[in-house]
Length: 66
Image 1 (cartoon, rainbow, N blue to C red):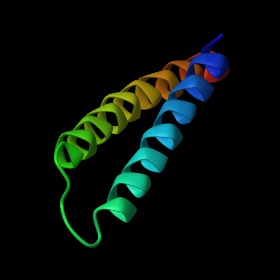
Image 2 (cartoon, rainbow, N blue to C red):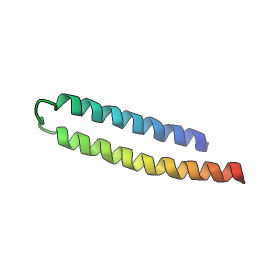
Image 3 (cartoon, rainbow, N blue to C red):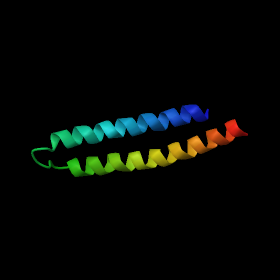
């Protein structure tokens, strides 16, 4: 179960990183309306899921180590 949770967090981080890349690519020439909000939201998601991934990894390690 912990592995599935960790994989979900990895997926969310990857998805948000892709969103940041897309937003950054589209704003190279100028900062469009709302693009800054998209970037900030994607960064929040990455931060949140990174913390959850860390917690999942710690719990999984505790289960394996016993």
